[in-house]
Image (cartoon, rainbow, N blue to C red; front, side, top):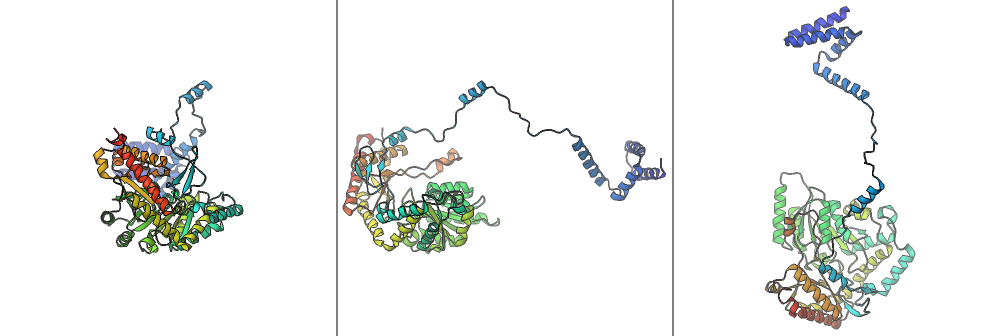
Length: 534
């Protein structure tokens, strides 16, 4: 044994004896050192440990562990990650499994009510103008079930310009706007709508439904707070669901309840990291027909530091002296609203939707809004039609005035004169939402299903007398919501939907209103619904 090795061993032994370790540990250490000293070069290893680690036992143990792990890893047997663990099956077994498998249906089965409704659903042949021809019977009926409020669908000048756009640009761009789908007509339409609204910038989407349902999740994320009206439409609800934000509801059009919810949100957020907070509402509500109190909402937005997302799908092109929407109708500066969303597929007789706001808000959507980024751009013929109809509303204010005259004429035949229904729509709304009066519902003990049956019979009676109307359809149930939550969820009351058009004369619209009123009276006085449908 070398003198260096002996010296190292004696030094270690002296150190450990000084530490007063148990005799068993000392004996084990002595045995280990003796074995180590028999290995050639052990003195060099001991000297290296002593000089490098300065007798630090913790560092030595960590490195020893890493050394053992490396040796074990290198000596471990190799294995393949591509091993097939599937159980081999014969052809007969595969066929048996396929026969036993039942795919989940994409839609639920039809109810008896839906089946009966679908069997009698009228089909229009040709344009959906004020007078429409039905397939099968060939009858011509007065069409009060279309959003063609200004009869733009039958305007020969618009038709000629749409045809010219198809010949110039083709049927569609077949590409998302961010790739090569943006054309000069899209940029013109965005500029025209922004100028019409009085907003700095605008972005156009290819689908009206997916506009609001993409705008909301592009700005609202998990942890953000959204305060929404309970009566908002189905596309808004899908946007709220996709955003995964915290949603707080306030009672429909109840400004006092809105302020209560805003105060509660602000109070809960004190002392916590700052989050984005939004108020979401509609200009004209799709399922109820009434109008939001935008001036008060803007005041509360400023007071409590929220942002406003306003859906004007049903109010743009209808409200205001030049059809600018609820901001013009209620004399609100449009720049006080952070985002104005609207549809081009209704009164403007085009397609798609838009979102107007500041330049930063618009440019953010070009990369973050899924319906804009991953969908083909709006066809050029529809972008051209949108620009032209916006120009017509500004150049011909008589169009809006004529529609308002027809709204007043038909309302005079329905709401004040019918003892069975009441109109919940705003006076300027061309879509009349007619629901059964509460006293009749209570007296006849009519359930929601019974009310749908009554109103469907009213639709059929109107059609039998030459007037086509429709019903307000209930929204699908929210996915992933417990039954208790569904019971508390706001549901639109069953109602008739009468869509007024300026393409009919005053006498024609009054006559159609009389037909609708008499049809409701006939159904309500019939034997079928005298006792709640029993």
